[in-house]
Each structure stands twice: as C-alpha cells, then as structure tokens.
Amino acid sequence: MEQADEINQKDRYLGLRTAFTAQQKKLHVLEDLPLSASEIDIYKNQAYTSFSLLQQKASWYYPYKAKMEKMGITINSDNDTPNSLPTTSTIKFRLDREAHNIYGSILEQNLPSIIFNPGYEGHWTPDIGLVILQRGSLKLGTKSIYNIDCAYNLCQREQLSRSDKEVINEEMGNIPVLQTFSEKLPTWKVLYKPPWDYSKQRKNFPILFIGLNDELIHEITFIRNIEKLLIVRKTTGELVKKLDSSIIKSINGFPCTSDMLSLPEPDIYGLYAYKDMDECDKERNPCDGKPPNYWVEDRIAAPVSNIYNIGEEGRCVITFPKTRSPYKIDFFIQNQTSVSNNYYSNGSTNSENHSTGYNTYDSISIKIDNKYLVNKSNGIYFNRFASEFDKNIKMSNGYGIYTTSINNDNPKSGFAVDKEIEISFTIKDTNPFNSISDNILCQDKFKVYAFATFYKEIVFKTYPKNDDEKRTISTEMIID
Image (tube, rainbow, N blue to C red; front, top):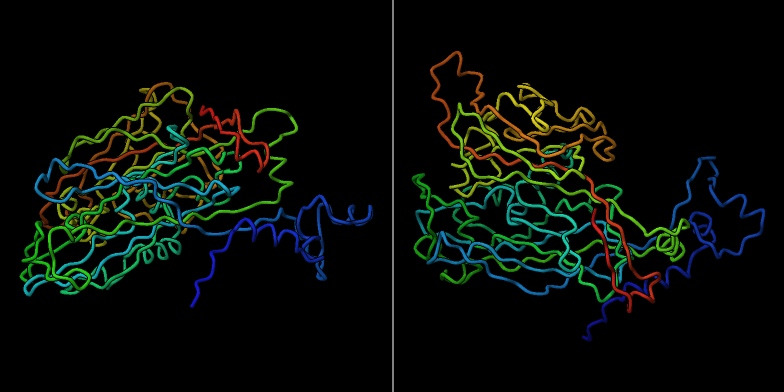
C-alpha cells in the first residue's frame, strides 16, 4: 500500500483560510470580507446569536502539532561514574520557523519493558517524565531567551490546581504499573509539558519575527542512564544501586547488556499556530513605528552547594541585576537521602514516601538588599496558604512559594532589588507527634533550591516584515 504524503501544514492553513463559510466570516476578524457598509458596522466588533448572547469576534488561527527536528546530541561525561554509562545527554531541537507562534510543547519518552532476575524487583523513579529533563533553554542563535531546570519544573508542577496536577501526574508516569515494586515493568510512553514561558495560559512565542535562516532551538539536557532512574531492591527489602545482567534479566525482550542501560532518545512535539495574515502584518508593522517588543518570564536561581541537617538554618542568596523586578520566589528543600536512592522529587521527612512524611521547614525569612521582606514567618503560609488566589492548590511537603501578585496568570506587581535576595529557613522535622511521643527525629540531609521569577523585555531590532521576507531576512533581538 502506497504511503500517503505528509500534510503540508502551511498549505492546509491557506486552504482553510480561503474556504471560510459566511458564518465564520462573521465571527472572525478579516479585512477583505465582501460586506456592505452597514454590515461592517454591525459585525466589526461583535456578533449576536439567536439567544442575544454577545459573541466577541476573534482573529482566526490554525493550530497544528509537529515533531521538532533533532540537530545533534552531545554525550556528557560523568566523573562520578567513570566506568559506567554517562548519566546525561544534551540534545538540540529545532523549532518550526514556518509557524507564526508556538504555544506549547510535549516531551515524549518511551520507557522500555524490564524483567528482573528472581530475587529482585523495581519501579521507575516518581515523576519520571519530568525528572529526566535536567535543564533546558530556548535560544535564538547563542542568545538565551529563557531557562528551566528540574527543580524549577518541580516547583511549577506543585503550583497547578489539584485537577491539573492529577492529569499531569498520570501523563508523566505516576501510575501503579510504573510506581509499584514489581518483577516486571511494561513498556510505556510518558508525556510531559515543560513549563516554558510560551506554554503558560494565554501566552506564546512569536515565531513570525524569526527568519527561516535563524536557529531557534531548544537545548535540553536529559538523564538517560537507566541506573539513575530505576529504584531497585532485593525481595528482602535491601536497595540495590548498581545494575547489571545479574539483576536485570531483559530489556525490551533482549538479554540485558551494559550498553542497553540507556533510555532511547526522547522526542519533542511543538504546538504551533498559523494566524491571519492581517493580524501578522499588524504585529510586524506597529502603527507607532517602534520595533516590536515582547515580554517573557524567566528565572534566576540561587547557587546550590550546602547540605543541611534537621535543626540547622539553611541560607541561599539570589544575586539580581538592578533592571529586574521579581514578583515570585519558589523554593524546594530536597531530601538528599531520597536523591541517593534515585528519588528526586521528595521534599518530605520520609525518604521513601513523600506522602507519609512531613514538611521540612518551620520558619522562613526573606531579605531584599539586607532589609526584611518577611521575618521568621511560619512555614505553612508558604506551603498550605501560599496561593490565596487559587484555593484549589495544595503544595507537597518541602515546597513553597512567596509572591507579590494576587493573580498568578497576570502578575502586575513586583519588588525592586538593587543587589540580592537572601532566603533563610529553619530546617525542621515538623511531625506533630514529636512533642507528645518519643519519636526519633528525621536523620536525613537536605539541600535547598530557590528561584526568583521576573519578566524581561525582548525587542526585535531587525526581523522579517512579512512571510516572504522570512526567507531572506535574519532576526536581531535585544534582551533587556
């Protein structure tokens, strides 16, 4: 049977654009409609249904999904395990520059089937679809537009509503067949939508300003060594760190060998849109004659080095340039005993199960340029009551947020920083039974991650003024 040609998305878009029905023309903003003066007056800004419901007119767009082209892979050396497979790989993915906008992307990772030898059992690390993405950036040439990493992504996941979190947890592999100790693990496809700025509600990145000769790429570092992503134990309960053919019988039906202990390369699909040409022309040629600008959300991370015990005060400093005005601070106190056992998203006092542990911080202080913004405030206001604008959010133990905005989708306020933000924590086992029983305090160690989120402006100094110029004009942008 002859294979059908792949659909040319741009031709499909243009074909639909010329095939509007009369009703569609009344609902969309199109400059070339054959309407009389009276019809234009009626339909220019609004249209009514038979029930007299006001219908706001909207620009027309055509959405589509396309796999991003891989431009190369770099195997990163791992000094900690010189005699085993490298832990990470960095892959460059090229975005579709024919599109007008990108409003989301999906990371797709195939997990292999695994059968353990008798006496052993295992499961994948929790949040497997998320934690394989260690760090990433969106770049135009060598200029970084914005950045994410695993700890930051975990913080953003915690700020989703309970219903959204339930859906994303299932998509990225938090399901019984992958998270329960078993002698057999099935093959599975996990999906994850990274929290790029363009993926947020009512946001996108305007590819219409990018030339076809420009390199607009995602550069992402992944964990691919299975040894770092499986939690394996003997059936007697003792955890196993080193994996080989004596522990794993087969992978994808083939006898296990050392060169098979690596995940296949992941894929990324972009969620793109073509827009009405009139709308594109207005964006590319603003009436004030100034270069188009675009605001993106980025974050600055505190350096991570110290490891703390229960009872100690953790401290981290985020150095800020004067031009930035952060509106939100995220933090994550990661259980390092869990990390040593390939459990990366645990911020609780129970290194084996975050859902049965307790919070790991008591009071929190935040200083802006050595002046207190928050002074020894109770930790529950950063974890349980942090998101007053959304009562449907419940953050896990060890995670927290401080924000000056009452609307997470459209932050209007921020705080001025001349030099630095200092965050200090009292690391504590908050088990409420400690004061009324002889419980042994948590003996695990902890590491603190903190991020300040801000907006920065991108100005497109030179760029294609129409789709034809995309073939000859390259983009120059200034990031303020």
